Length: 168
Image (cartoon, rainbow, N blue to C red; front, side, top):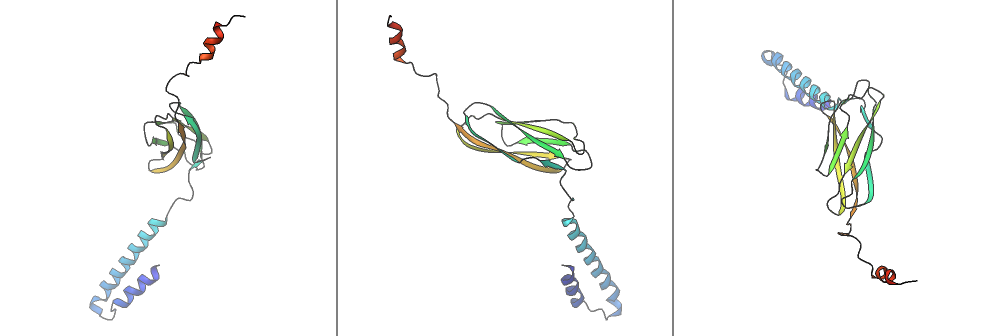
């Protein structure tokens, strides 16, 4: 990638003039170093993730409306330094994550318990964002289908009243 940039600057600058040769070379070198620095900064990513999720998604399947459901996600610290969960943020108020604020030691595991209380019927997909070690983040997702529950008790059965009146 740097070779085409160097060729472009080399062909566009006349290095034969002794008055400007030094300054042109200095500017060319500065541009190349700056380009290299920014290219390197964009590709320099950590070797691996510290936070490893056993699974990133859970499907509750069919759940009745208004009944709270819970699922526990398992996380592990695969890094060599303690892992601090700064925040676990749900996308709405019907989803409530619970987690320990204590740092997770290297090689250790922890849990994030996610609760969901469906008020509306239909399908749902709720992302939960895990922010850790200050600026890193990952997402977990819960989903399912909420079915409408009956509004009242079961209707009265007239046959029961009839049987109660019968004498043996």
